[in-house]
Length: 357
Image 1 (cartoon, rainbow, N blue to C red):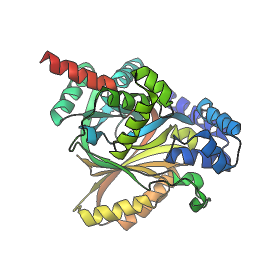
Image 2 (image 1 turned 90 degrees about the vertical axis):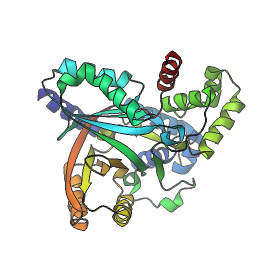
Image 3 (image 1 turned 30 degrees about the horizontal axis):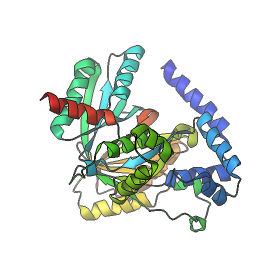
Image 4 (image 1 turned 60 degrees about the vertical axis):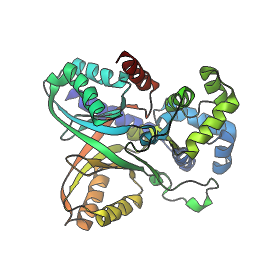
């Protein structure tokens, strides 16, 4: 309990330190929509010098507002499906929990890890080529840490939609932005995968570490020419494998609170899904909505200033869809430890296993 209060205290102090002005928010919004934009383009749009923009970017990392620059990869297009594992922990010490988290973070099949308050304590996401592979990955984790798991629920992500953080510029006229952006970013489960070679996988791996890595640096590491890297990236974008370039913020430092709401609908159909997604698209604080197969059908990820803001949304949402909702549960994601769509280690592990077999 003391650890929980300490986390909230640190979050409070960091929120006091961030002091984001209108130019900071616009800059973060531009990066959220395309984190590969060159400094010169960013500087022109927020009317600051290139040096001032670089200073601010470095400050976001220093203050813990941005963790990394990420690509959104449609893993379904390279043969992977995403799964989420929701865990209720029991009889686990602080040190044992840290070891569990470390194990998940280092697992090349795990894409995201977060701790939360609510009906679950821990969530992690993984990618796998099949449900059998996913089961094998989870079984190996459970062999080592299953004694600490009181409850475990697993969902399959059917498709997912990312939304821009419009709350950052709620008072700004978006039509003034000179950069043209897509309005939605979507990816799905495994379907008709594209054939990739080692260079393609290497590019996805290095961009997943930092999308602002220069092509020359990627070329040096993969031992090919910079022109080859540029052409390969363009091809991956055209194939919509590389869907989007965004930021991985520490939401608690950026705005206040990160919530995930699990919603179980009754009598769900295509018309209802369309109305729900349209409702989400228009809400500035909803940033991610996966449709899942499991104990519930949808998850809504929120960046909000306070729990009151979340309650206000859920009240409006419940009133609008009162006849369709069976139940919902809100989880406060108070810490994220990993967010990485692709890790070449998983591909190498798969190849080594195939060679052994």
